[in-house]
Image 1 (cartoon, helix red, strand yellow):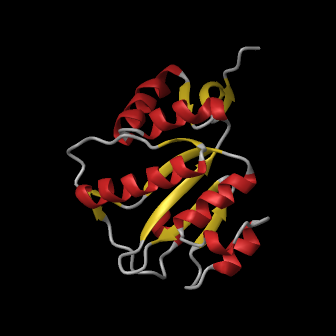
Image 2 (tube, helix red, strand yellow):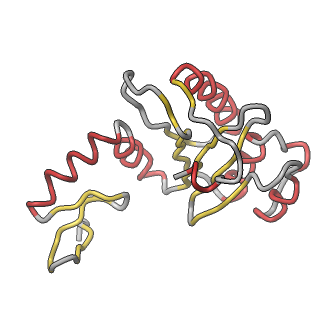
Image 3 (cartoon, one colour):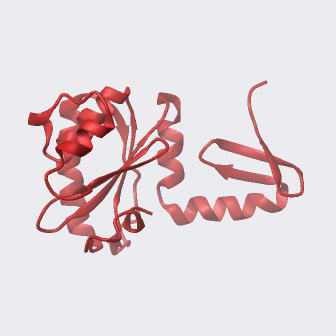
Length: 171
């Protein structure tokens, strides 16, 4: 999805070596800020990547701090809101938000996209597993659908009417 968000930039897909190199840099930044995060795993046979997904559990201020560090804007902070962070971007529109997800266009010479998905701490492992090996989670969902089940970011859902699902909870 990230590639569509920044369609006005020439963002190329990353080979697996570049993806891993950039991921190491991102992990150092995330560890420096001290937030809880997960990065989905991928099959070693995957040849290229359109973006880097990071699931993070952070307060809004921490989320903005992570975004500022990823965009190398931390000297302009601290930022109280997303508008201030966007105004600090020296080159074009490099930050977009959709719900709890921040899309960041990182890097200058070879730009790449980072999707920072903010979620509750108890969802970090589930969402990371869901997005790890994306084809596998889609396969599980395909197998569950004839049983009236659907696997989504919210969790397991049960079909109760045509096209209508309800989230399975403890209650």
